[in-house]
Length: 61
Image (cartoon, rainbow, N blue to C red):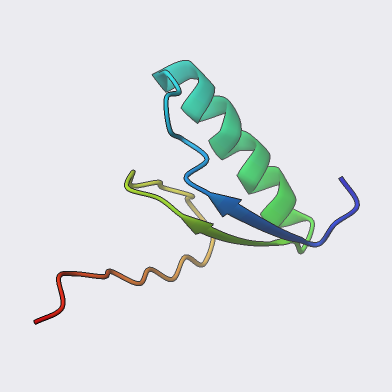
C-alpha cells in the first residue's frame, strides 16, 4: 500500500501462528520503508531492530 500510516485494530485476532508471522513480516517491511503503524493488540509482537513504543492500559479505579 502507498499509505505511510497504518492504523490497525487487533490485527492478530483469530489468526494462527503462521499468519501472525506473515503479518509481522509485512509490518517490518512497512517500517523499513519509513512507514508508521499504530495498532491495538492483546498480543505481544516483537519487531527486532524497530523502535516500538507500548502503552499499557489497566483498570481505572
